[in-house]
Image 1 (tube, rainbow, N blue to C red):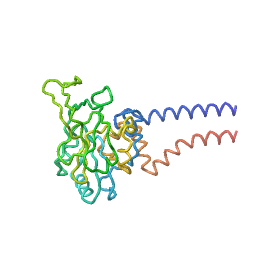
Image 2 (cartoon, helix red, strand yellow):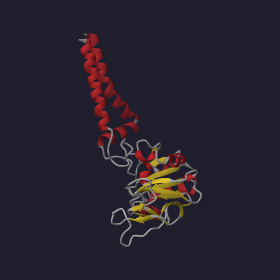
Image 3 (cartoon, one colour):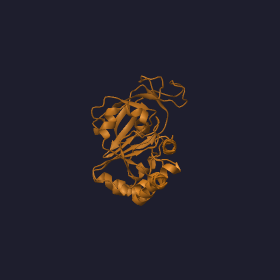
Length: 270
């Protein structure tokens, strides 16, 4: 009978582990809870939610922003930059332009469909970028593999495409109509504020393609309040909130441990 009880308990634990693993992962692009190719679970970064509590001199990554910053939050970022902190905004959809304007920056993200002949892949949107100028994040980096980036205007160029690049508006994979070859800037900076038109560089599948660039950023904080690094999964969010609250974490642990303790306590009484 005891052997059967252990077998049942083992099956329950395995089933519970499988359910937990399924419930605490997601397929949402850029999510820290997505272990797939388009998630950011493998990106080494500490999450922060309050821009008013950033450590001086740190590097903050705002990845694929999708929520607006309040006036107070923008003020915190401006003070952080003025105090020597560094902010890297990675955006390919243009959502960061409002924040850039509020920060007084002239840089803007210009969404499009850049393609290039300077590539080693069949996909024209997956091509090579070249660091220009002198920037710490590209120190020792000769080339960067870009993944459908957006152009960045304004500021000091840090990363450019080759001249064999065009905006493939009709998405036919070749230069046609009024499309023309030209260099495009895909990363630029103004002081300690840097804008990168390729958020996809930080997804799991791309990390191994640009290891030196990723390593140059470390250590990095990642904005978890305004970026697409979170999730809409209510179970994950509930667990995350419980972890942030000691009392809730203790209650959650009790819910797991007490039934097992009760089971074996009853066995001893029998």
